[in-house]
Image (cartoon, rainbow, N blue to C red; front, side, top):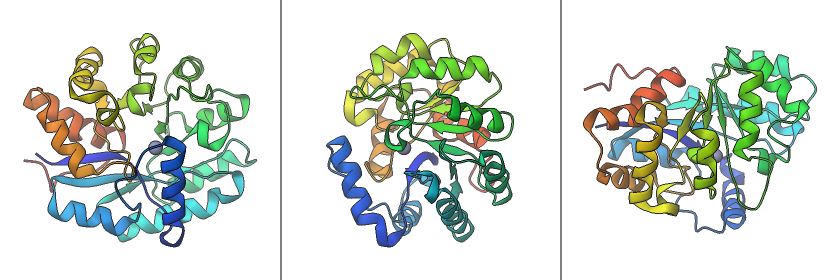
Length: 267
Ligand SMILES: [Zn+2]
């Protein structure tokens, strides 16, 4: 069964080694892969993970446009890629950059409050959600026991203000605070990905959360280059799920949320 990996970070080749190293240090994990797009293409060639939703995160307002151009180039060069744009709440012309993201053919926005240095529900970030509502889905990093900026309770405030905003809350809505996140995520009308989940809480606990939230809301993701998409796929396939649950999580939900054409892949 093929898969869409909905959560992959890629970097400008020249900058990748340093960037990947610093992510590893930030999360205190040994990074499995390089963060260079060629590696994902090789993985698509030899494994069931055939499509990647790639993203890049702007550390500040000044790198937003450059990174969105980079993402557009990457997805134009690689049919395996669906690319997300980046934004920063500190930039002035959010609305026109969203127009540009759409015209470049990018299919959503990736935000990482902790590494971009803003509170997920701050006033400036709300301008992004207002402009994206009904137009682009947001892949949102959620949860970190060391920080409060990406806490899932902030997502409740966002979806209350913008009920039609399509959100994929990464890492089951609360990386490293998976259990604390349940009280918020259970009631919310949003999707979640399972990236950076299995390596931290194991297969059994992941399966429990999948059952709690339901396969209808969940997307497969690896958080490449932190983890190997192939290995994450193998671990995922060991979970005791029905074939229909596997299909929803591996590709059906992602193809709908990010508008990915899978007609050549469907079995
Ligand atoms: Zn991420």
